[in-house]
Length: 141
Image (cartoon, rainbow, N blue to C red):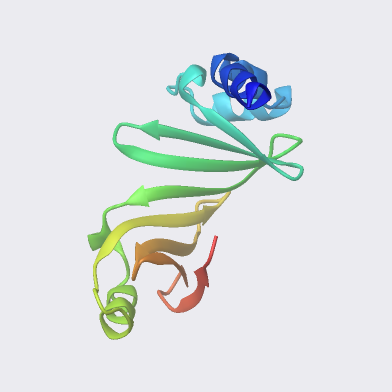
């Protein structure tokens, strides 16, 4: 019991920096160049294999930007108003959900800005769609 208590105290008293990941300088430089008005202190970084994801906000818009270790932007996911989704997505939700309410939506774009797909929260889960609004899969994560 004492060990568990000591562990809990250490866990909650260690500075957050102790759990920070080491983001390569090339990634940080690329991010700063692409988003010069974003304060780096407000960015949360996650490592996904050999890729680095920056999570941040510009105004009320949440953005995730995915980079490779060399600093090349691979894709972005940006929150959007559900009214901006393709009609096919709303049709799918209305046909397949007992409670057809879309609570959040993101648009996925490649580095060139081309729409690659959409992710939404609806039907008590996460759903993915292609750029035309065709259902791709349910994200069970």
